[in-house]
Image (cartoon, rainbow, N blue to C red; front, side, top):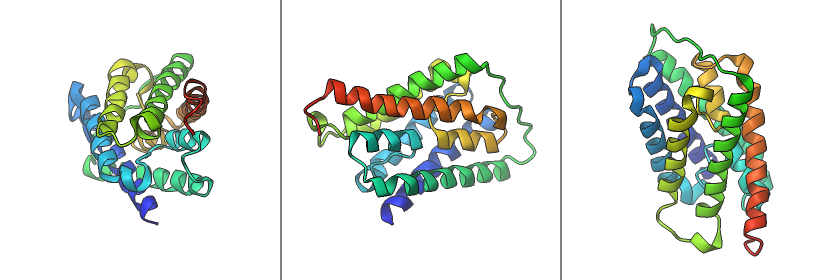
Length: 208
């Protein structure tokens, strides 16, 4: 139960930070830095308990890589989505009255952008948080957080820079993205998470 609570809390504060820094342009151009930092500190806080996934695509990749108990996959997904939804509700309450216009995205560029940086994110997670060669390191949270920051700065204006199905749910609830686009995030991100696990096994064949 503790790990589910941690996954809920971590995902909540990740999505809460996304909303508070983006809705109403709170943090302006520095929003990606705040979002990456929020992910980083939550990973350092809860990584030793739950693995610090806070992302269904990461959970999928870690499971396929063999470092997540199969019985935890669906519960992780549930608490991550619920955490994201409640965070979005809190943002809507705190930012009541703020006019939010869903960003306009082109399907294929958004699919590619979300796929590439979700792949990068899960690939980094697998190498810094589950691999023998980096076991016991103290930088894993920083590496993962900065991957999200890099992605958000790079392609945030193309796809919204979610790289996380739970974040996609959150930004849809907040009105930052249209619900009609939710499939783009889920498809690109879950495929990327699965592919990252497959590539990890290819480049680290002795790591099991």
